Length: 78
Image 1 (cartoon, rainbow, N blue to C red):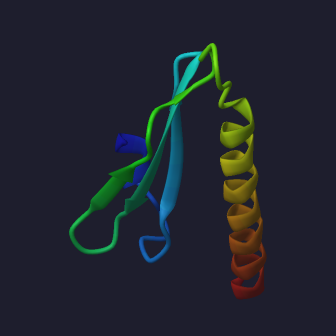
Image 2: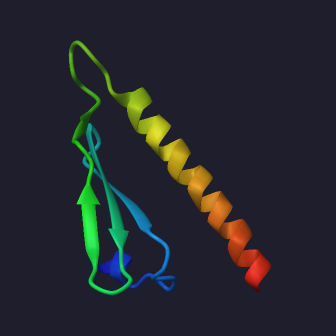
């Protein structure tokens, strides 16, 4: 979260992922003004009835899509 606080574009949210190998948690932080963050539910990959790997991959894909859109916007500014 310290790394996320150093966001060079405080008007845009920062996304992060915390993982232990079989558990994943996603973080979204807004650093403009008073810093705020939100945590996702904990995702488990080793659940006997429901492996949440596809949920984790879906979230990563959405974050990559958002980042790609932001990179395009930033290249227009430069």
